[in-house]
Length: 300
Length: 300
Image 1 (tube, rainbow over the protein chains, first blue to last red):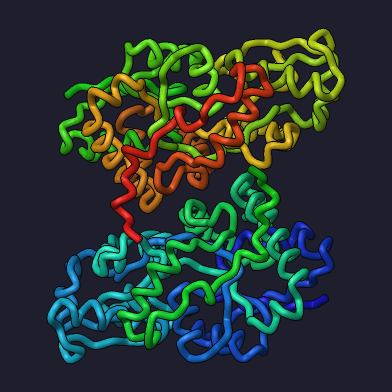
Image 2 (cartoon, chains in turn green, blue):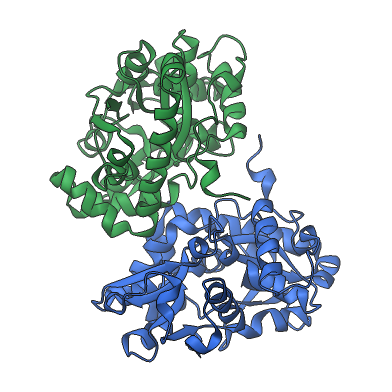
């Protein structure tokens, strides 16, 4: 069966487990013909999956709450990246080390909820939205920083910060988890999401999908060079020192078992409520399920 | 206070979190002067910590059970490496893909319990100890394999297998967790261990030690190049392509929170009993404690 799978970002090294599973035939041997597609605007992802056009994809935890807050019945069936460090990245000479340092600056963000997070932090630090300018950079944060289109931008330490470093610039990161006293970047954990309808109609397919993806994850962790060769086969443009570096920097953030982390859902639920992304504290257990997790592959 | 810390192996890239914590002053700012020492024989570690000579060190989970089985009151206070893939490594042309393939071969192992594991697998596959020869290679497995002193040897995919690959040889790994139907390599998870007496006399020091080590772990994961520079400062001989590669291959196996994993202790307890390393099923909860885990650093 051909299944569309919508990435959360352009195809990049942190998608390796999925690419490995596809290239090594782990999906096809389970009769899944995974059609991997990329968004041009990451903000489209939960909408497209939420309205049932595309059955399966990836998105960060805070966006899953936001989608539920809008009435989309998206549900997470697992975790790809666990707590990748996220924050406001700036070139070092901009001296953006505290949230109040954004006064008078141009702040880049990807989609609307990045802006919500920045506005919330700024407001808690006594700033108003007039004190700084927000600029939607989309997937182009590193380029916007290097070309001085923004003074700081939301990004990942294992991705955009590596992009900047690789071009010879020193940078800083003002961690959002620290500024917001979250204790970890679980709000930015990247999850496998689907629609509740698809769960009802295709439960076996979802179980098989997760088993195949776990096999891809295991190869990625145990044989990183093999994973890189799969990535390069699918997208030769990734065969550069930059993307290799991003790959190795991402390795420690891959989930080990693809499981949803209940603690993180609870924590991010409170945060999403504080951000006004959801009206009241939703039952966080509606947002994810362990039903398709390949837990039996590692019995107690 | 100066505290001896006995590594489980010669100082190598998988010790990075500890080296980073030391080099960046995370221990010293908590008044811990960590004297990091290396064994020449890894089998000495639990004995030295078990008899109370050295207060703190590292050792794999199965060896902690073995030490308790011998009456040593060692206890784990946390995890450094989570389930590093472990198995019988062989050069590819030796065709060692199943445990019965060791018939007539020379099998290298590090310490006595590696031999116990091989003998157990062989016996379950219908072989007797006369069907193969075991050779104690100590820390020299990769060299012994390349120089044809043994046909296969126990090692880690992120260490000895990388050593072999880096010298241009193709290799295979017969995974012990798969052959023994364990589901994961938790028996080989590398733990922070101490003595029960030291826990009673120095609980605060152990808490501070774990907090400092977690800070070192976080730098290691978020800024791998910084971690490498700390390693090279302490041991310039590690500044080679081989050790850099081992470092990046090890990154996905560092524990994320340094916590002991109760499920793994339960599983390895049964395995240790099956291996005859412990007489009966010990109360596995005596083997570890969460008391010094820096869990409050990431509140729910």
